[in-house]
Image (cartoon, rainbow, N blue to C red):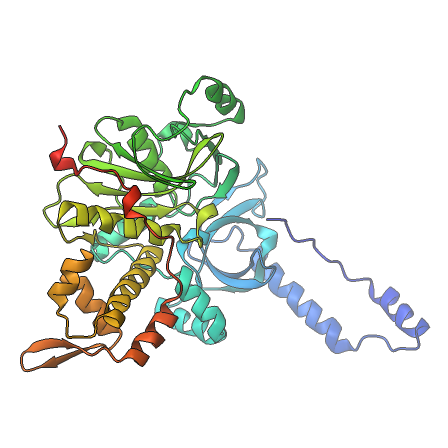
Length: 438
């Protein structure tokens, strides 16, 4: 993010002369007074530099517009002893934590500095300033979700420990990607603003030269597992965390940079990882993945799910969800994702459940029960019930839930749910459930 150039007003005499030459008038005293008041306000706040953690102020964002922020952390930007030589790690109160970043002092409008205020009041004021379109976009992509399992003390501890991103960027294949959240990499990597990943084995390095040397020796051209699906240029690989422990741990480090709500599992032995790849003549390039426990007592068919940012909004997230349910069908089980879901994960699941269930209801002319829907889709009955209730398609009559499937209502909901993702061609899936292996 570029730093803002400080504009300097011409001296009063020069401004007055220029106005007179152009047939105009010199600026009124009110304009001069306003500038003096503004300068006085900035000077008064300069006396309070560096800004304290918790300070609220307006900050110029990447859209070149001011947005309200809260100072989360600060650090010296040089060896100078000047109180102005600080950078500030800020949270944009309108947005999800994934947009938190370090900013320079000149990006902050010191005239707007204010004491910490109550969160609810601040959030209400913020929402009133936004247009409906802005609010909808923020609801779609920047809603804080996924900490329902944490009590207040645990949530404070989580936020304190992860409040500052330790890695700002990564390079993975042909992409340089801005990270979203903190990930607990080994301490020796904490001073690295950028990490370089091998896109095939997921080893990570501090310098580009290290990656280049590694790539000359790395024999992998795809994830280190069994290819269980190939359709066109898309492939899915199943990686056993016990057989490929380092790969599984590196994948968790990578994923945590984009997932705020999940615990990082160092014991990857208990998990299977399903890596979705786009394949070309150079190899199979990871697009996203999901993981699942080998043996889940809660009938979870998915633990974590992530589509890497360069591949988002292309239908891959919905494909991964659909794939997890196809595996459940092969196992002869119903499944549900592990809670809590991330904000984007929750949106994707709601969309998937809505499309799958309503398509069946449209084609099914006679009455159909929730259990029958569950048997057909491998979706857990609780998820079916909550989805249909959110669409007002469930009524409670004579002690039981009844599905009300008016065709026009179904069409309206399907249209609102948007397009589906990429289809899973089940005929191309060659897979044996884990319990049956070996």
